[in-house]
Structures are given as structure tokens and as C-alpha cells.
Length: 472
Image 1 (cartoon, rainbow, N blue to C red):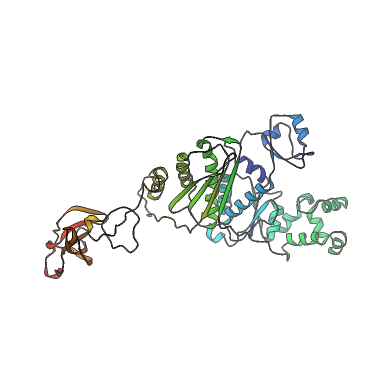
Image 2: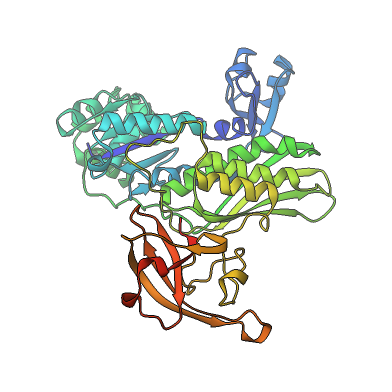
């Protein structure tokens, strides 16, 4: 077992249902085809209870019931969902392919060393797919083609080289991935199972059917076939939800924001990256699109955190016009470095981590309201502004600067760094001439202390130091 197939039998319908807050009881039918002959492509269980079936004409469906909603099938949407799920699967394997129809193929043979045995990896994939809102079937087999056809009739099975032949032989012809006309022709010959096709002479198959049929049979048994194309994750993320009507309240945008935040988090987890800035684009019908920028101090990828930050910015934004569509665009995707935590975490479970609290404050109060500790271009410590962006080449300064210096009385302290000569302020009457040191007291505290400029430390006792600040 080296390949896993994630079959997505209801991908188009799942994509539509993900846009709804309450989708369990919705009677929805996806329709396709020309205007003169619209047919149902897929229906929800509630619509099926009304008597609707895939393949039924829209006119016949409306004759049966009018208590369902018809939604146009958009093939571009289906491809976007497949691309999103391929990005999600990329976190489990570096070889992900979307070549096989209605499915994702993953090479998992080498991933088991990282994620554990196959049952554990399968359970994790199922849990995340359910959270994303996609129905699925998963089958593992020695090659991707066999896994794909076995997923037509099985779910949750894993086959190896010893059991693959028997499993393939039990497949009915109509579920074996053969073209419909080929399966029909074989059935007229009395062939019902794939095992019977394998038993036919190759020369006979070559004479009666196109070469692609024999290639397909060889691929199922692990023969030499062209390799699948591997998925390559894009350099940016863009998700979009279109509304049925006009949305005039920012509160109504929270559900699509949460859904797109989950999609962005799944995308980032697949490429093992984070996001530092993303844009919420509000599409209007009567005016140009408006944008809400969300910036972070450090790359993040937690779905709840991304949602909370976007929510804070969105609630402060004014909607110039009703919204018809909502997009989330992220182009700055730097590497993500998870925050280091203690092995025995003493923080209460309900406490918010500092990075998350900091980003929440910035989202609610504004970018300028929350800032780090910086230094003004001033030598005198009393006049250094402790606000703004830190200067990379700045010398170390204590986080707590005392309003008045006091003698530092400690006979067991030691000098960690220094001296740093500060001699300035002669032009305004505030002249200072000091040699500053970073010292460690006998209690383990780091202090910033000074003595008169030019006085050797070895010639004076520790009590000659004047304490000016404490380091955190």
C-alpha cells in the first residue's frame, strides 16, 4: 500500500452547501445543460425526499415539486474546490495529483514515517475533511489507478500486493473505470466482473478495443504507465463566495469570513507557511470594490485567529454599498515558525497567548495603538522615547527606567557588559558624563547601572554604582 485515493463524489454540491450557514435541511438541486434542456446534476437528501433525482429534467422536477432551490453548476467552482483540497492534501504528501477524475491521489508510503501507521493517518484525513465540509471515500492501494477504481465501491479499505488482485477481480465492469461503450460491449459477451476481463487474451482485446483499454487494465495491475502529474501549490491564496442577494450588514459577512479563514488555514498548513497580510475584498454592484486590509506583526495560520483578526477589522469598516461577493486574498505568505512553549505549560487553558492577544488589540484599536518598545536617537537615557519600532542596531536598554537614580548596594554583583560611555547634553544645561554597565545582582536580577565617566570599576567598590533601570 503506497497510494491513497480520496474520492469526492459530491464535490460540486458540497461546495454549494459550504456557503450556507444551515445546510442540513436545504432542498437544493444543481442544474446543468443548455437553457432548452436543463437537467439535474446532483440533489441534496432533502431534495431527494421530494422525488428529485440526478438526470431528471428541470421541467419534470418543477412538476414534481416547487419546494426546492435550483443552483447553476459552475465547473470553475468545482476546479477551485479541487485545487483547495489538493493544497490541503499537500501537508500529508509531496506527491499529490488531481489527474484522476473526481479524486485526489496521494503517495503515502513515505508519509507513514511522519504521521504514523495508515489507520491513524486515514483518521486524521477524514477528520479534517469533515471539518472542511467535504464528503469523501478513502481507499489505499499499491498504485493510484487501482486505488481510484476501488474507491468506486469501497471506503476505508487498504490493499497490498497480495490482496490487490482479488479485490480488482471482484469489481463489476460498470465500476471498473472502463469507457461505457467498452463495458457495454463486454457485458454483451457475458463478461460481468473485471476478473473475467483479465482472463481474456491480450490479442483479442487489442483487436476489438482501442489501445487505451489495455493500458487501463495494465495500469490497474501496476504496469508501466505514464506517471501522474504532481500538484504544485500556488504562490498566493484567493477564495471567493458570491451571495444570492445583497448584504448590507457586516454581521452577515462573518460566516463567509469564517469559511474563507478555514480555507486559508488549510492552504497554509499544506505549504507549511503562514500569512502576514491579507485583504478582504467586498464586491459591490453599484460602485467599485472596497478593501479591508488585515496585517499581522508575525506570520500566523490558525483559522480562529485569522477569523478574529478579520472580524475586528470588518466590524470597524463602513460598507459604501450592499455587498454581492466576498473575497479573501493573501499574497504575503512567509515561512511560519510556531511559537515555542514550555513542556509543562502553566498557562490556564482559557488564557489567550500573547501573540494572539497582541493581534486582537491591533485589529480592534488600530495599527498605531499597539506598538513595540523603541528608542529615539538620543544618548541621554532620560530623554529616550520608549515607543515606536525598535532599531536593530540599538544598544540594550532596560524596560523599566527609574525616574531617579539610586545607589545600588550589592556586594556580590558582577558586570555582564560595559562600559558604554554616555556624554551628552552640554548644550542645554543637562550635561551627563557616565559609564553604564549591565550588571547582575546577587539575586539574579539584571540591572543597568553607571558610575562617573573614566572611573575604573576595579578601583571602586560595588556601592559606587548608581542604579538607573531594570531589564525584564
